[in-house]
Length: 357
Ligand SMILES: CC(C)(COP(=O)(O)OP(=O)(O)OC[C@H]1O[C@@H](n2cnc3c(N)ncnc32)[C@H](O)[C@@H]1OP(=O)(O)O)[C@@H](O)C(=O)NCCC(=O)NCCS
Image (cartoon, rainbow, N blue to C red; front, side, top):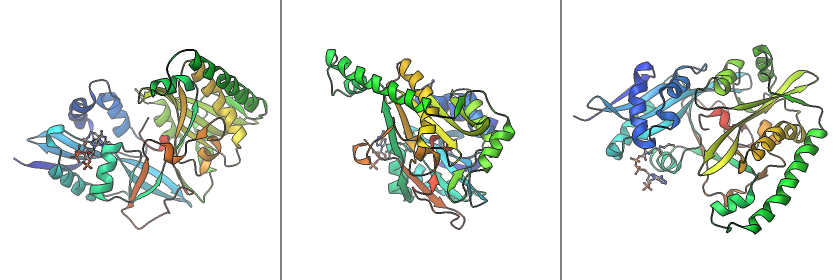
């Protein structure tokens, strides 16, 4: 019997087959191998139910990609992207036939304005680029704070362990502390972790500038994305100016490619917040992670516009694209007529707009 394609609304009945397929590739402990993570991500999303593009072989799920709804605002209009995630084919079913079927499923999606792929790994990127020929619009930026430079150089084989490593760490730590305390001292912005009233979060997101594309960050979305995940644990700092909520800064500590990283998942706030004010917001979390032994703090996102542009200043250092081990392209294709230009200076995306990290 051949492969059977079904484009279906993701529901409780898909969780177990998804978990089984994930475990073949990622083992039992990955987030996508956990039922509660899949339920959160695909069923409880306040921006809508996800659509599974599912491939079955004799009734068993052997391939899938999922269209996760993500809403974006531009000039007062809302556009819903089918953010394509969780692309996986069982090792025994990889090849042309499965890919053709999944792409046929992709074309059957309805109710979305555009297809969007962010931060695919090399295997995914190869398929989007060479097979689907999905337009790539710009590459995400990487900005980082090396909190333990000697440890990073040692794990990449560029430095032998020993005294020289320690010598390298101390001046850097001193600089970090100075940069952080200066940033915090100069600032009138108060930073706190108390979760705001939903009305305040909704008001903040409504205040955002209209000439750029931003992901819809309603109170319900923020609550779901940063507080309800059963697996991903986030640290959220809220910024207040004379008591009024003016932004928030979100991180998640996780091991990535063998490095203990503090990822900046989101920075969102009033357009007038300065780089120094964002530094005040980030310094507490970066300093805490540094004291707890993290090796680096890292931003992966579009630092060409919006709050992430201001938040990626010192002590973060933007890594020139030519030094990055690989590019992380934003692929997108309109299903309806184009609603906004997808450019680095216009389409503000952070990890918080995706399901990654
Ligand atoms: C993504 C996937 C469905 C593609 O399946 P496929 O096209 O049938 O077959 P392959 O696995 O051979 O991969 C396609 C291409 O990616 C490359 N590739 C695969 N794994 C890779 C890896 N870990 N690193 C770099 N490149 C990789 C292959 O070399 C191939 O490129 P080529 O055509 O230039 O030789 C499949 O590789 C898969 O399920 N992988 C595991 C999950 C995954 O990585 N998903 C992508 C998430 S963004």
